[in-house]
Length: 606
Image (cartoon, rainbow, N blue to C red; front, side, top):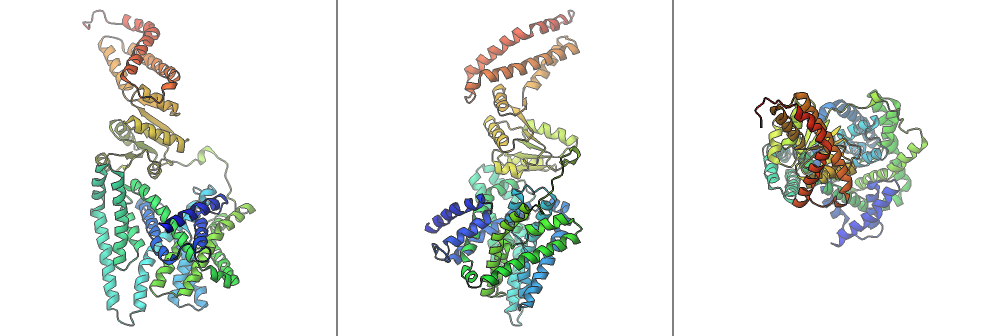
């Protein structure tokens, strides 16, 4: 309890300050860890134990990355991810490995060091891009492609390290290594089969219970179970979590799972960075400051040059190459995991690992400062093209997000399907989700009144949001959330009645369709035609009534503002109905006289 309080106090005190200074969350966690670690205040007695526990944050991070790794997305980005990302890691890794070998490391150790230092920090780069508004820019897309390849490449390397360590310690006897390989392959096959045939039915059954706590419990069980299975087989826990995420990437439950896991991932990843700060050998920096700083500077220079080379080999312009070189010249958090695993496997020695972790930590700490200086210089600031109509991106995926897919939303979806307009569905009924999914549509299970689920389902990227939820309370919660967090989104909403419509209109929802109005008007038109009213007169009468009703709705919205938050009682509904009939009598009598004069006198209608 004491240690948990120390971690929370340190994070709350340091991380917001670093963010305010533009240094980023990662540096804040590292500095907080240094402050409470043995090098400073010494408030935590066993930082190594904390570091071991905090690696669960890396497990959750790999699970989230696996969830995002949909095959369709990889297919679209395959050239940027595999070719460009491979070029970056190959050039940087080999260059650093060559330098490490020349400095006296063995070939195996040099390759591990080269690969580990060739990685960059995914959360740090994405944060820097987000702060500069560059996530959707060309350099932002290429940076994301490189980071995605690095994350994927880390998985097999982490899986191989135990085998390399076992092979180095066998002294010619390969039977134990063969046993480990068989055990690892068997665990991998079991995980794939369980994920393929058990995960989706399991989440479906839990979703039917309608308990968010149980859904979260199952998600945590899947992540930790897959991680422990791989660890028992001698492989990396991160590998198990990553595979479990990939198996659920195309599931309709992906947004709900991702939204539930995200807070745990963030907190535990922050704890991991704090643990790294606590275990960083600050004394080593004080003993050999010049050597350590030269190594950090050398890392930035080598990775910068190799990124320039990789970008030019990929035939991309110099401005993109320079920007990526500045963004990704530091080390990455997976380097900590990789070096720790290599130390446990006996492939790297403890003094070398301490130096490497210190180098990566300092490079992450300096990266925001270097990026800020580069941008302020004006040489690397991204050039913004003038906005032109034909430069606007065409939204192909998630063009329409339908929230709620009961009878109302289903009609909208069917019409869109007939015109082959892509749409995504977010609904809280697991049976309905499974049914719609059979027809090949993007459909996800989840509560749309949660911001994290809306974001995960693509609300920010959608061209149109159709709010078709039948429950008034849920509809209003979702509408308020969308208006607050996505103020520029085009929102069309279904209203259950006049009061619901007025509430939505007060939120600024410009297009509100009352679910029974149009069908009732169509029935009224048919009634008039059966009574012998001419078609054009019936159409005119219905249109006149509709326009009058819309004006009355707007007027009532102004006069009932004081009771906006009150639920309508039966008496209020009756009074409103009397007012409507009175308004109709005053406004529509001349029009109805014209309609009545056109009745066929010879007809036998009553």
